[in-house]
Length: 276
Image (cartoon, rainbow, N blue to C red; front, side, top):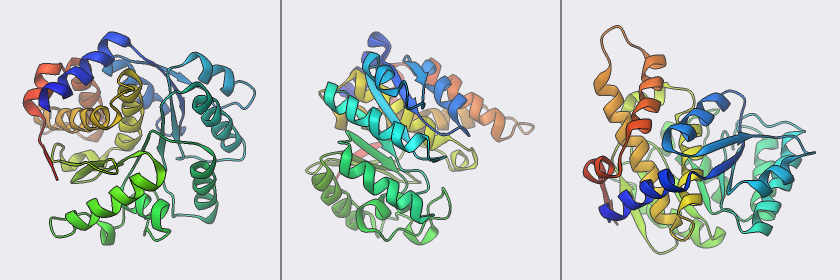
């Protein structure tokens, strides 16, 4: 499997996929930079008058619900349907779903009208999508939903069922990451707790996962695993570079730098995961 992860990264570097992002304005710059760092190219467009054209010239689509408004929701639906029509991979990041009735309604509509290749979120967001019962704290997972060693098997069973229902690869990220199709599940242990102190690590990860699944469209499960391992590993490497004077802003930049310098060989060596 580790050799496969190396191939997934190398395909991104070689193919340089162009990714259309309808993402939130809090992290749009970070998403663009992480895509450039991993070897892809970003386009940020959320105007209803052009999203179908933009999606048509891109290889993949990243839909992020972080800063919903009445203008971007129709754009998400149009772009998603166009991507489906063209056979392009689509990733959904349901940021903050469960925090408001409006977010829940939009998420439900997206799931009904757009076929997603990957759905990536924290455990509270994924539980809200699947069960209508996540306990979101704004854009953060609630401690009550935290995945632990004791709840891991139960969470994997739940995620597999949601993958079967949606036809998507489900990626649940947190202290322990889970990536699953309806049949196979992987648990990823890369990362550093300080990553939770940066606004946008999840958004950046979704954008980068969009690049990985676009460059490796025939292996979305493996591509998603590679992306999550890469982000977590680079979080570890970036943390080790910090000095006593550095804080979360420096850490964010170091993560992007580490993604820029990451090789297939170092990903293969540093990835920490198990199949369950």
